[in-house]
Amino acid sequence: MNNSFFLILVFLLSCGDKDNTRFGDAEVVSIYRETLNPIIAEISAIDVALRERAVGSADQATGKNFAKQCLEFDDQLAEISILLYRMEPPSKLRELHYSIRQVVDLRREACKKIAEGWKVEESDSFSKADESYTEAEEMLDKANQLLVSVNIVLINVDEELAHYYSKRNPIS
View 1 (cartoon, one colour):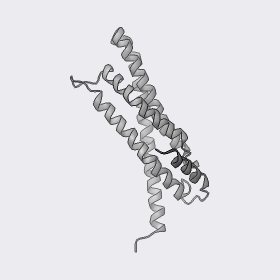
View 2 (cartoon, rainbow, N blue to C red):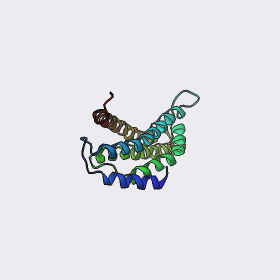
View 3 (cartoon, helix red, strand yellow):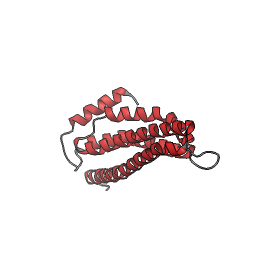
View 4 (cartoon, rainbow, N blue to C red):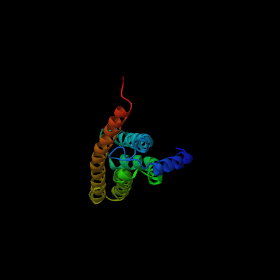
């Protein structure tokens, strides 16, 4: 994504002063949602790919497979994290935005724990690596719980915008 696009987005988001929806100015919130959609799609695609690729030939996810895939996806997650930290959300959506950043950060940290666990498992034993795997699983569970909350808020935002625009541009 283009840096100048984000500068324009930040400018537009800072200009909105009409709270014509409960989430802020409809135009600003719409721009934010349009910018956020591909980022969320990429987060979801990484999650699906990670789950699919972590399953090995034995049709079982392993520390080795997860660690390898986590390392491969870390650059993408880092880029997403940078994009999210550069974005300035509408003031009434800051908590939502923070939650999305947390999801990405938790997934990155979980991947690091999985990679650490694999190193221990490879050099020593699964039982000694189990603590890292358990921590990673807890982080992923927390990220997934946050995603549920994020999705609920995003649905509410989308419904609010649809309601606002339907009143503004009624179909004849």
